Image (cartoon, rainbow, N blue to C red; front, side, top):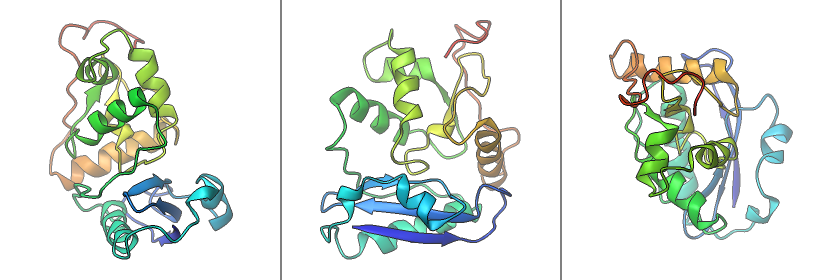
Length: 191
C-alpha cells in the first residue's frame, strides 16, 4: 500500500516541505522518502510493487502522524514496524542498527560496521546508507564520519546538516550529540 503525504513547512526550510511517499506491506513500513517537490517525484522513489492493499489499516496513518511530527521539528522516536524482507541480510542488519541511533545523537560509519559484526565493512555500510529505502524512519542522517565530519547523504550534506540541527534544537542540545569514534578522531576523510 502506498500513501502520499504533503508535509507543511517546518523548522528545516527546504527540507521539511513537500511530498513524502510511504510504502507498506502487511509486515510494516517498507519505504519512505524524504520530502520531494512533486507527488510524481516522491512516487518515483518507491517500488511500485508496494501499491497493493496489504498494509495494516492503521499503519500508514500512524506513520503519517509520526512523520508529520518529525518534520514539524518535534522530538520523534519512530515506533513503526519495518518490513526489510526485500533487503539482503547485511542491509537488514545495518538498517536495524541505524534505526537504534537515538534522536539527536550521531554514530560513525565505523560504529555501525562494528555493531553489525563487520568492522572492516565501513564502505559497505556507506553504500547501504546511500540506498536507505526508509529515510528518515531509519535515520541515516545520524551516521557521520569517524572524525565527526558530515559525509555522504542521499539528500545532500546541507539536508543532513539541517536535519541534525533540527533534532538538536528539539532535543534542546547544542551542538548535536556528535559522538565520533574516539580512537579514530584524528583520521580525516574516512567513513
